[in-house]
Length: 113
Image (cartoon, rainbow, N blue to C red; front, side, top):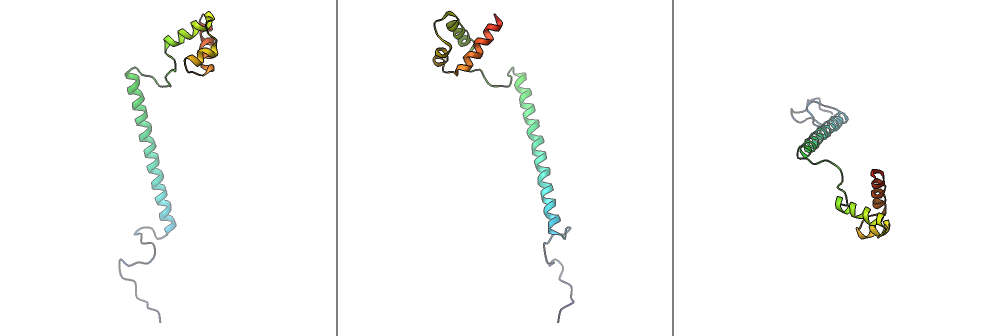
């Protein structure tokens, strides 16, 4: 014979959520909460990055990769290749850069002459 008595308060069977009686809905809620946290984190990261870039600009720094060669080294390579003392490949080996770096440097110097 089955008991028709109600379960004691606080002793409900199943998932145990006070507001959601369907476990699938509870999981969806958790996933939505995680998604909101990720959006918030993305906004915080974007704001920090933006403020860091603005601070760097105020200090006179700009973004981007630093040149491998100093302006003095660039002038020396152009002089060595234009005077015929070294080839572009020899200059690249001498200054430990890729030959295409020297080729770009020489092309830029010819445009400015």
